[in-house]
Image (cartoon, rainbow, N blue to C red; front, side):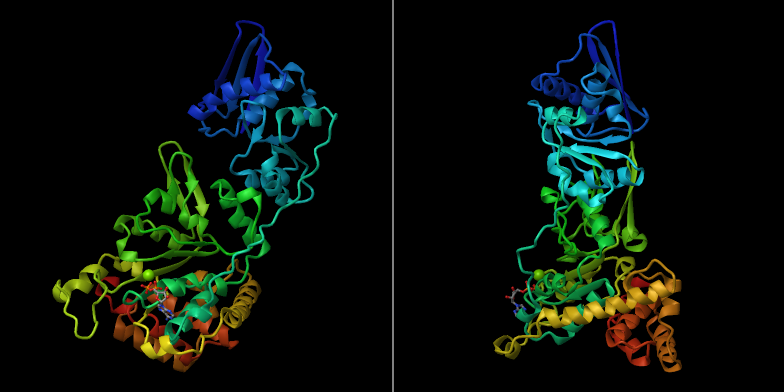
Length: 492
Ligand SMILES: Nc1ncnc2c1ncn2[C@@H]1O[C@H](COP(=O)(O)OP(=O)(O)O)[C@@H](O)[C@H]1O
Ligand SMILES: [Mg+2]
């Protein structure tokens, strides 16, 4: 995107052309006021600002700063060559301050890759500095300080990359009493980044378990951290421009709209699925979500990215997330409780569960039932195993996955995201395992997708153990986690 400024004799005026949206139009007024406030009034000439290419929609206030810089170069307030090889973005306040805008990190990375320099708001400097030591950055608080910098009168200090020190402790697994099966499944899900759905009565601890998943996950790698932060930057969710290596955990409410979940809107903002990239998307009370909103998750679940198409734009954002879902067996939540007869009769559960489509369930690797907590477990004084040792096992298992896929020469990080062909090779099993698998395929009508997902989980079980090959026992446990999925008639 280029900003071209032309100052020529003629009627006094200031026009912005090139399909600007409303915010860019307002930009004209902000630029005029900010220049005046900085003692850099506009020349009494005809000014035309062209945002090129003209057929790309421009939005937001990002162009205030480049427009102002172009004007200043055109009128000689700064040397003309001061703008050579510069990428600039920032919003101007009426008093000449430069305010924060979204998307500075990706802009900085692009500038670094192209060997250009970056001019941005001071408050975004910490974010920009992550693009690397080689990138020259001018992060200015005001227009005046920027002018002085570009004229060589006053040097702006290079910003430093900031990290967010997470002060809040994550909830710990030690709080969970009993629920051995669910704890095991959670560990497996964490180890292989598997999608998981938990069904069980209210108060069984489903939400509690899901909230403890972050404490089991390894920190983001440097590359993942940049991916996650770029999305957060575009969404305007990088407080103080500081980055964290904590894996995202997004838990949108079931009233969430399509746009907030998958992205889009006026500004093509990334949605929850993208903000959960490299982390977890937790959907509590799954059947309460609007069905067509849930169905929109199928594309990102399958392709690890979302494409949003609107009349005036088409963008893709990465969306490789681990989906964790929880639901009650029926709306009243008491289905299957001994001695309780639901008012809705026997169909209460099927009606409720049918709100989740078969194809959606088919994308789950692990499906478990979480029964009510046993009183003896609740009363027991012995705490459950804490998150720390579990996280250590998870880290080792993930390390094995990363090494294996690197050795195979493929860009895969976890079993949960391994494509069909790759997992078939990685999870090659022995004769006993194979016969169990074909048995199950026949008996439960395992779909091709179901088969792949079983292999993925089996591979993770072997990785948790450090076993080089997948054995029958791993297949058996993996099948146990698919039990409910493949019993759903509509999953075929
Ligand atoms: N297994 C458990 N161990 C300890 N406390 C539990 C357990 N299950 C539930 N609780 C308690 O019950 C509360 C409700 O649990 P929650 O996770 O919200 O249940 P669900 O999501 O299954 O309805 C929790 O905040 C916790 O205090
Ligand atoms: Mg709950």
